[in-house]
Length: 311
Image 1 (spheres, rainbow, N blue to C red):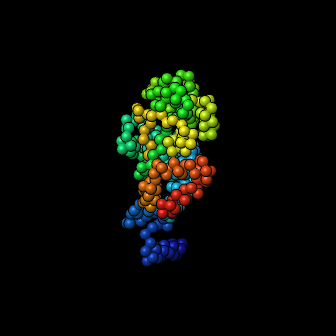
Image 2: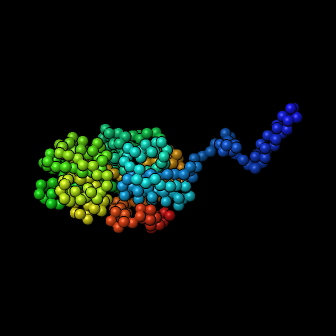
Image 3: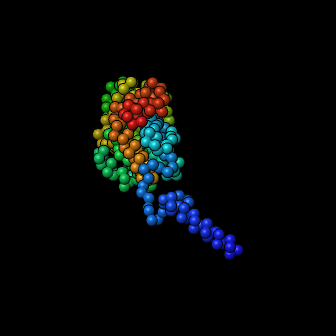
């Protein structure tokens, strides 16, 4: 037994010497040596999964983010069409996804319903402290996509509706249409009633655009919400209603990421470069390629990245 123990001790000593001779700085489990603390890794040790909400622009942006990461050597994939903010925030926090394209104003009121910020700068300044400690935002883009209320040209002319302030004249006899989650959002029916005194007769949820567009055109609903980058607004000639009380906060595109992604220098640099290149006009063009021209979001993203020399 003494001989066996001696042989084991010699073997351990020799293995340790061999590791040192090879310049090893990690233990067999891959943990950093206490004598040489590791710096934040430039490339994530785990793949980055970029999620998206279930609408066109979010899917395109998720593809852009993921492909930009891959171009810089970061392993990445996408999980598209997850659902509303309530769902993909949970996916971030349970680590099902690592990042998601977001919009500054709506993200702020999601975590701080009593936020008083109104300008883009105020929103950006307030966001970091409003987020849970495990979530971070990267650099907001100049590209903006706002929620917006619209009516048809005929309805606007007939009732004199050009602003959210005008809705109180017709709300009690009219129906509002929008995505299901709008019904309880601060900038949805609750805000319209509280801020503008407009309480609608009914709210109809539309998970997808085509039925909502058809019903608005056919006067089955009188007011609907879209995004300002949606091509359908210009194509149909809808009247965008002004928001003089700033009920809808500025919505700059921003990556929302887990802390481990925020600590990944290569990933952050790749996403910052995308953010710097994005413009509102280009968002509209990208959305139109998918919605109107029926192109694939993955291919649209790839072409845009190539045009910007980001992939």
